[in-house]
Image (cartoon, rainbow, N blue to C red):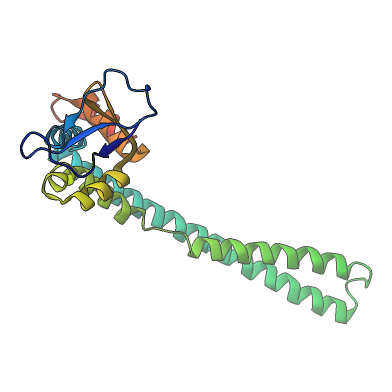
Length: 214
């Protein structure tokens, strides 16, 4: 069951009406609902995404600390991998020198060379992966938090096209059931909505932080 504007028409004054558009007979008893009523209901849902300023600040700090910790871990990982690469290169150089001097049997040389070259290739891949590790999640996380914070205001002031785009980003499967709007929020926003419901009316404290830390 989806929501659709009926022929772009105006009914009973200035209000646009919506109705169930399921298959014939699949929406018995469903009534038309004014566009204004839909807007108000959706705005009320989006208000549920709004995070208290104290918690919003705490979440941004937590993301920043996580980014810094990830940067430290990345630096240590690269240092270890670089040291391993240097060691393997020296082994290969020494192996070749030992082959020339006769200190390594000709039958053993290919096996050792293949093993250490394979290990070196794996280290090179690991270094490239570590260097390319994406640290943009902080900016993305902050953008999500700020969108959730302002979604209800943006929705009320946006035109119809921007509203559809915002709703498409926030969730899916918008329906009207018995005159009430039902929406399935996407995972990130659903988590925010549920956390807000859990902490509703609570003073900012350690328990709120535990709920939001997820």
